[in-house]
Length: 169
Image 1 (tube, helix red, strand yellow):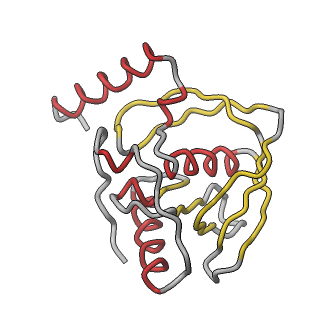
Image 2: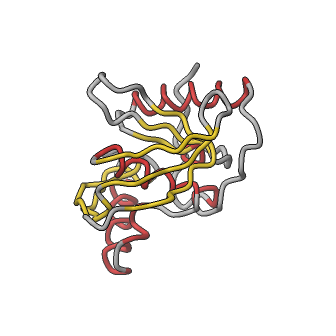
Image 3: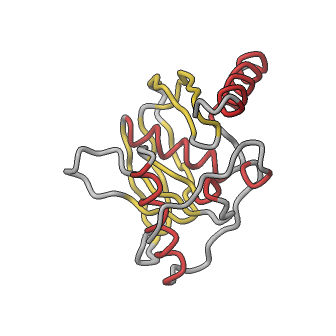
């Protein structure tokens, strides 16, 4: 188990569709452990494997208050999204120091392979749903700012790059 470094935008691994996982082995379980360590160290509520340079369709989410079990997902696919939207401020350790308010469906139904290799269909609501959608975007080669206008996207990227260059983050 280890905290892994986040790859910086515009690394091409952040813009490719991640490879599907055929089976859950000790390799995937170790990656998930490292992802949780990295996510909790950030701190954050979700992480996709590509954010630490692994282009495999693996994600973790823990948006709870300790009462709900963290989720490990392989090959997550959103089957259904509610028509009710929810606004939440999103960011990414791959583009540090900047955030944007995004509207996403308040609830989603997701199919994925769990840590046992079983196909699971599960509903997520609120922050859980937002985080799952954010991770599915990452696994599809999209970052949160790709959902913004070109002008806002350019401003966020420029601001983050300036903060990094000045050593402020």
